[in-house]
Image (cartoon, rainbow, N blue to C red; front, side):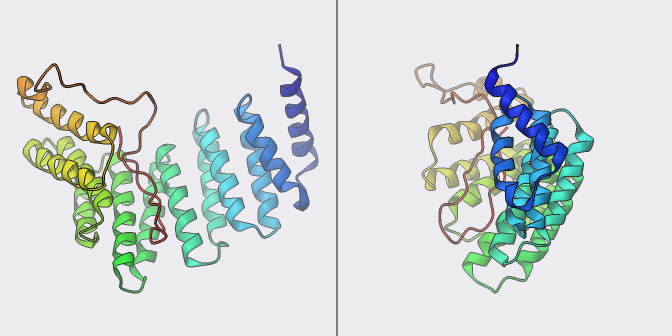
Length: 285
């Protein structure tokens, strides 16, 4: 049985989709899509796309990108073709985003969302474009951190595509760019190196990378949950060589950190400082 509120939302969405979203209505359509996403993802995704097109016509490129990205993430649950179409629309809207900082922010958020949604080839392509843009930043410690993060995001997409050798090369470049005091960024880069080495069965290299990742995250003040992800993968690397006793916790009295959130865990969060223009890559399992 359809709830009265759900029916009201669906009726309003159908009216928007039938009549078209006017230039002055795209914000309302986007808000409605957000509400509808809780109960009807397909209709919400369609409405997000309609709102994105209206926002584009109204000259609000940033919101057009964000609305299309929301449509992509909803479509990705059920329809890969529609998800890819929404991703292409969002990428096209990026061209109208003015200003280097807004462009980098929106492009990075979109690239990470595309990678998470399994739109891998397009995510890699966009990541390479982002890296090329960071190449032109004026030399500074800030620019080095921005480029290192862009490279780490590209490596994450390559890893998800199973292109581990390429990911190693990109991560080595990222490590060269990362400022020495950017501990969280370095932790993510080393974590990615560990993942790629493990997939290539370079177990000792993977373990060394995880150790460096753990040290960097500890210096960054990371919480026990993030450290536990590194320790878990280090234990998995040991187990792959048959060293099961070493893979187990040293003492049964030492609790193993865990997260109550069973969903996808980001190893790092977006930097809070103004100097970071790029979202961080997901390094969690």
